[in-house]
Image (cartoon, rainbow, N blue to C red; front, side):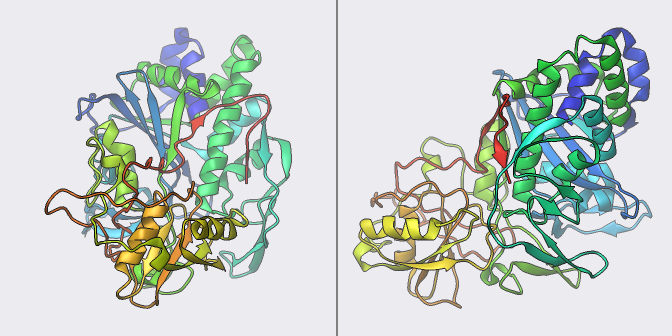
Length: 498
């Protein structure tokens, strides 16, 4: 998508009218400025998948790009299976639908582009000023036009993922061989183009962290594509640039408020992908527990009367991303005020000494040996920690501390020792359990810090459908960068993902 925008904007402005006529338009009634007054503009960039046999289009890739007045650019990716509140809407048949919980990517398939925009604005509190989308089939044509790109795939020695496909047939997938998407290749550095490039960015079966790993693949591919375009003769070869410009323009859909001149501003910023000048983040998600409403131990929920696999997010994680950009998140305690990033302070008496805490440590990520490593680190801090092996699912991003009746103080001490973790009450368990997510960074020494009079202890109940729980961090410890917060860059040696 980003490469498509760049190609159109550098493809020769003398052919502006011709290119503009190739771009599809949609009326979304978007404003031209930033409602917050903080940023220059917010672009919603969407990669849709409308393959034959699909019921409508799906937003396989959704990125909110914030262009700040200070010259910085932040791109936030939304996992398609995030369990969110879809705003009320009226469908094309005139039927009114009340606000309800559903997967994030259901918004565009249910209510089209307007409902997707409303969903993003409701989630983030940020006004969308420009809407840009491209069908993935157009993406394939662009990839072919530049002769493909190089990507790097990590070796993964875990078990193959087994599942039933849409026809009820049992399938088995790994990150290098996935019958569902059709991708096959790696590990290591490989050259992909055409159908394999499309399969590479579509695949999520067989990836250790599912949709999260797919987003990482897409981000890697964007960087690799930019590097290929900017480092070769594509932009100086009249034949190549004409071919690319036509393919890119024909693949784009813009809202009526967005002109090609607006794309020039975005393309100038996106060029930072090749130099590491863009901050790319992904909203952290996790498989829900039974205490959060799951109907089984693998994170399924009952949705529209059927079993569905979804991912919950924590409002505070999303708030840490959007509040600095002028947004706000319902249910979040993070405000962006000075000191807020450290999380609620721990009140004396609300925690227990590490020597009084027994905790079972589970690995909820795809990082091999993480539970054993953290068990040793907690033991060194005085905890009575036990390595409990792998959690029931390995798709947790943020770490979480679950506790049974009467164990709140002990749970808060564990959470204080693991920055970025949240606490959740679970009457079905005994004692304290720590499930480690892929964003785990370190174990620190918990320190008690007095809270202002009347301040809340900040421990969430964990029963919200969005997974909204309080955060208990050691005062003064650095807050984790939710969603990785990595700065994207591309080089001759691509960084590896699953």
